[in-house]
Image (cartoon, rainbow, N blue to C red; front, side, top):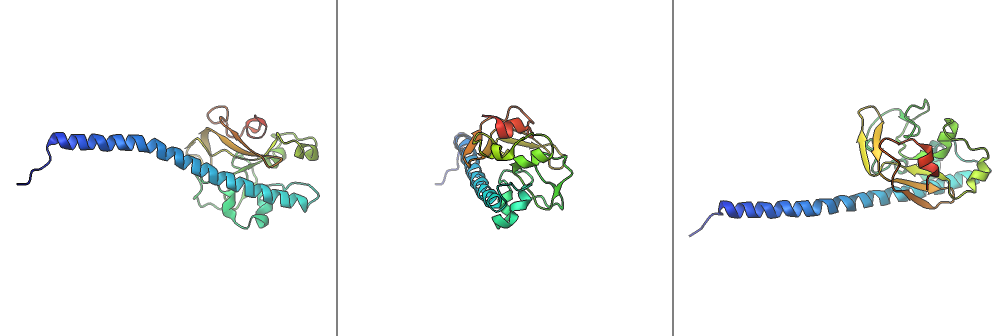
Length: 196
């Protein structure tokens, strides 16, 4: 004779399932976050190599922005962070640097990474001697701030962010800034390029 499950057995099975999800979900989120961070780190390194190739062919002078190295990259997808909330957004015009959304200079493709010369051009960072700056391994050249918690504000291409910033320094070394210094401090060049 077949017997159905009792209410108690169903509740126990449901509790076991809920407990399993509660245990595995944080682990999954941590693994996924680490994987995306690893993908962005790889992209930052490839962009750095392209920047270096550009500089070696232009008497040590850097590209004015990341669009200038597209021919060295071979794939526009390298300029998009995996964690950028507007990664799939289709638009004819993006800010040329995601950290300076008010800039008048626009980009035909999505550029997720921040580049120090953009801030110099905008007058938000002073670099007296670029060639001397290039020799300082503590100064960042390229950053990705889309890690941690990202909350799009509803305005085009503006987000509130807190969490780590990945950075490639002038000498090509990777630096991971664990905390950007508070919610919304997305475009603070001191934290992006100089903070240790």
